[in-house]
Image (cartoon, rainbow, N blue to C red; front, side, top):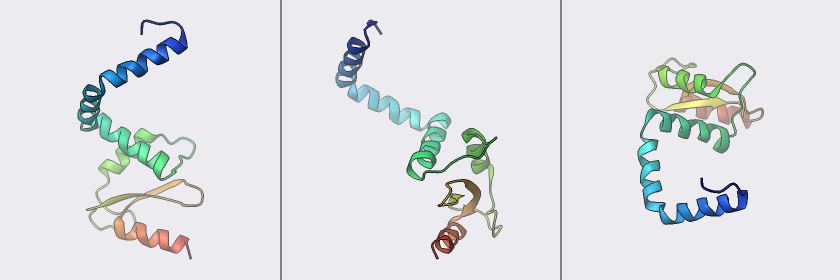
Length: 112
């Protein structure tokens, strides 16, 4: 970045993004196909879309790896086809990796 003044740097970056929009979009599309990009998208979805929270001692990368390697539902023990990262809707804390059916049942029971 050629500017020390934060306002000039901000404007420079804005102009660069405007001039190179296609290039940056293409780069983002390719990056999202990488393992790092997939992990980043999943974690951001959990944190910001689903408002999930971590307990003390947990970290997002470990949760993501656990999610990836889990092959069976942690409630009904069926082979996972569509995985869900289950969380308590009141506290936001993550609980289990479940099949879609068990996750839907838990969400329904919480709302009774």
